Image 1 (cartoon, rainbow, N blue to C red):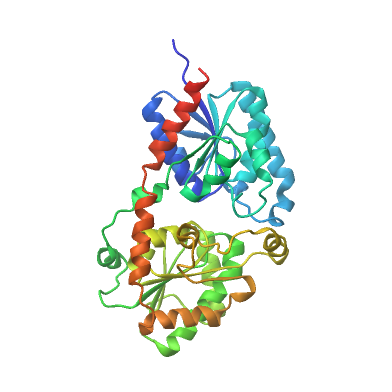
Image 2: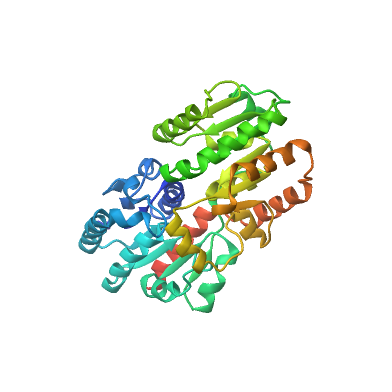
Length: 384
């Protein structure tokens, strides 16, 4: 009887969980009896992935923030390494979380296990020297965006641009009015979504800035309705605490909602943290302003290493400043309030920007999960 194929797969946070689930589904089309073991969230587990640790334990970011968690992260990596060396998967697939997954891959590849990184680390943005370590750690890089492949081609690292699954999932029809009905919002309401992120640190650093800007904008445009999506009960609790500090209580003017996709779709304008949500807002064709802050020491280190002029994905994909972004010390409630008021006043003509959004959307709508699975199959078959 033919042995069922085994894949090792590790994701480190919610966005990786979504990508991993799509990839597992596509790989099951090719390998119907395959097993998937590693670390995944609810979406990957729904596809049959067996998790050896809680995905939330890997959800750390920055240069400084993970330091306090190193012993736990090392223990998780050791557990995974020992499992994979014993059970010998056809391939190990790291889904994003490069600082963790590439280290694990570097310990598996010398043992003859083929290794894949799904989502390129930002070697094109900073720490370019990592490319040599990446080359030693992986057999295949699966990049989401076309601009990411150049550095791998240059260094002869096998790479395949698969596009982004969000671009596949989001169509070109605007469902704003239908999605507004789910929140009890009217057709002519002026709606702004506030999205300070899902991590505790993001909400702490960005939440007050966004909320203070919203309150200030109401002085000039009291008809604005703000919707604030939350990703978990913990993030809801943190946002509610910030609202109370400002003397705001959820209701008609400020509504907490549990679906970020619907919130973006229902809104006219988005105020959000840098990250995957900026891609989603672009694909849904919503104008936005992007803000981000990290721990001071993390920023001091990162700012010396960054080689790119922008951080928001729409700007990186356009290779120009397509949407306004404010980082670290440049981010405050006054500049965000000004951007909201510019939108409300009609001062900004978004038509050209929205056309570029659509062009970019089409360029990365490539059936990502199927392409990724096919590339992995090709890698496996190439070595027999």
